[in-house]
Amino acid sequence: MRTRFQQGLDDLRARLLRMGGMAEQAIDRACQAYVDRDLGRCHMVLEGESQINAAERDIDELAFDLLAMQQPMAVDLRFILAVTKINSDLERVGDQAVNIAERVMDMVELPKADLPVDIPRMATAVSAMVRRALESFIEGKAELAQAVLEMDNVVDRMRDEAFIMLVRTMNEHPEMTRQALDALLIARNLERVADHATNIAEDVIFWVRGADVRHNVQPEEPAQQPVTDVR
Amino acid sequence: MGVGIQVDKLSAWFGKTQALYDINMTVQANHATAVIGPSGCGKSTFVRCLNRMHETIPDARATGRVRIGEVDVYNGTSATHIRRRIGMVFQKPNPFPTMSIYGNVAAGLKLNGFHDRKRLDEIVERSLLASALWEEVKDVMHKKSGASLSGGQQQRLCIARALAVQPEVLLMDEPCSALDPISTGKIEELIFQLKERFTIVIVTHNMQQASRVAEFTGFFLLGKLIEFDKTEKIFTTPSDKRTEDYITGRFG
Image (cartoon, rainbow over all chains, first blue to last red; front, side):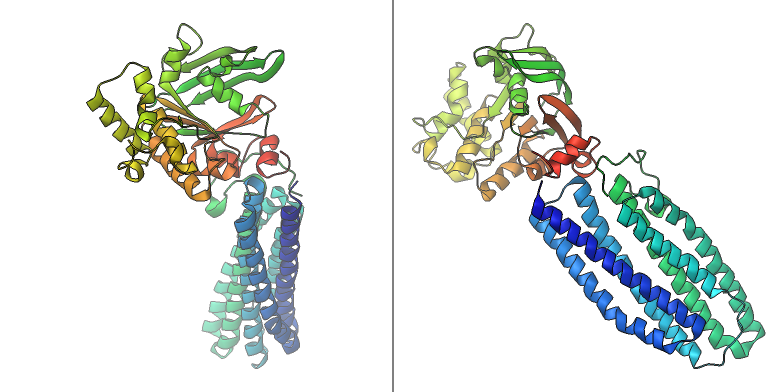
């Protein structure tokens, strides 16, 4: 057993989970800020971004060291590659949370508008995707990750519905255009978070099964059962 | 051109101790195939069975079938003929110390009764070119002994010596284990070029080396071939847990 290498992998996993927690919290805070029109929460999201960015750099550095110094193979190589990609997706989830917080800050300055769009419902679905994608990583379970992929279509439909309703609002109530535009951008931000959760789930499947399922392309050979218990 | 190797139910013994168990493997012509596994797993015994070197050890024997192209190695063919078709390079470079560089490369041909000086010159030059040693030794090859070269050069000299008899298969038993990284890089580059003309089977403890030079890799454990597949498959998504445990350093 390569003890130092295993410690490095454990450290990488722990750091990524901490980062996942930060990104998840940022999205939850931004969505709650939308519901409550809460500027305080918006500022917390903005201030938290630098921590997420720093965590991204630390994880990349550790992954780079492990690749260079330990020459990982097979499941370990797949794990490190998956971590670097998940790391990048989590950082972008943090960016989307900042975008949402900025839109909320804009909306708070405007009169409250009764918009025909259920952003909290969409936020709940997106948060669940991020949480489940991270759970699939924690547990090393491709089945959990697969379930996340199937949720992406639901969020896509919600975004499409939001677009239709909000464009109609802009046409019928021009005085609500700015609020509707903010809500439309938030719906798009949430849909992108769902895409990042999907990417994370695909990376977990790659790590566990060695199968590349991106872009709905089925692997040439059926994904095999993991030969190592990755948990 | 290289030829393929077909191994069927190959077993080998040292006295009463069985070293290989029913090995089946198809080695593709003009490709490099790596054999990996922990010490004592039978990988060197396996390659030594391919050119009947195994039987040179007292009490050693082998059963099963090995075909090199159309030739049945263990049935109706002399060991000398087989070894002429299959060159071998060992872990430690072993040039003939009293012979010049030229003499080393020409030794195999001369032993086979080949004495045409002009043809010998051509073959020596071609072999030294093929082993990427020509430029370094062309001006001193008649004066300097093989033993005067550096370790990496000696190993390339041994490869030139093996190539001079125009084999179809080249067996390499840990050819870089005694070499520094620069010499190792040269040998690996050489393997890459040589497989256009020869079939190469390389035993190595260095998994990075296997992944760099070989298209196919076999993993041996306790005398059994556990897994044989394309190299990228073995090193990224092996099918057998024992292979994964070995290449990820969890045992061995």
